[in-house]
Image (cartoon, rainbow, N blue to C red; front, side, top):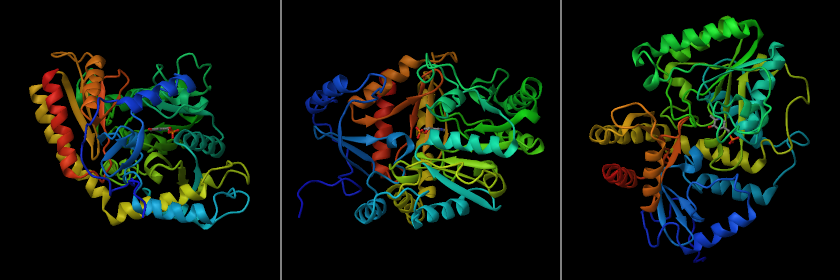
Length: 450
Ligand SMILES: *Cc1c(COP(=O)(O)O)cnc(C)c1O
């Protein structure tokens, strides 16, 4: 029997801080990272991980951190989730790659069948698989352009869609994603998003006014008949967990339908139970023409999917879509393990419960802390937006300071937001209640100190 501790849910579910964070071993490895890897690859918290599972990440110095990040909404089923590990272990011994376009294998088809079944809408669908969220968004746009014979793509303020040339062009924020990386892809048009907290005339008017502005800009500046696709996150992720005001998404979807525009939901961050629905579009009954998924799909193995109406996806000629690794057999097995886990452990219900624990506690913290301007989110995708007290002026240094102090105490949190002033919380959906509560208690203490 191996005495090496394993990752996964059998790891002790406890916060344990035994050195400074980062500790000496992590610091030594970080110095090597600095010498070997360009600084453009940033680091949120320079602890080097040896194991992870359930609600914790364990580092080389033996610290066990409460994980409020899930590797950016990826390990929703937990790290090294047993069903994922078991399937991948078997697959890696059977075969590791053939290229699905050369000689196919069943697991790819199973993932496609499953996604066609569980994504919103009961129309005929097709799915194809890729390696990353950005690659999938690009492919969704390719398909929409091909199917419509149009070129323009409409995206929104605060949107994030990836780091490749096209998806960087679709992304709103300059620093750090776009700065000095131009020129950008043409035929990309940006319109307002219904951001309730920052809507000039108040949250109650936000949905209607933002939709009217967006649609007016599309009509007047682009021409609806030139638009191939509208690409939108049902909750803006990197932009700061902005839930568009209720009514905004249905209005945009309706406009797309009326004008033959492909409505693409980028559910890379929101998908697979994260928001307390299997897909965030379900909250308002939106049925996208194409839904793009990645992050939570395969428990950390690189996989992404484009799922959409058969009549749109079937238009592309044979050989027009693909890639060497897309739908790699290990990643497909992992995805099947993820979908089994979501069902068997009711992780959608679990995400809701996490929201029910977090939101009231954060709202109570916010009442005593004027530095918190807004508490928002759904399910296990929750954020606080920090402001200069008494104003709505973004307060990114407060967000950074709170994150730093959390990290020092063994609570891994991430920041986000167009203004860098949002703390976002994305715990694995399998996180035990006691760790969730402990994480919130640490946060409460740190915010009170600030
Ligand atoms: C992360 C993300 C992407 C890009 O996915 P990668 O796998 O990093 O390429 C695209 N869209 C959204 C909404 C994301 O959160």
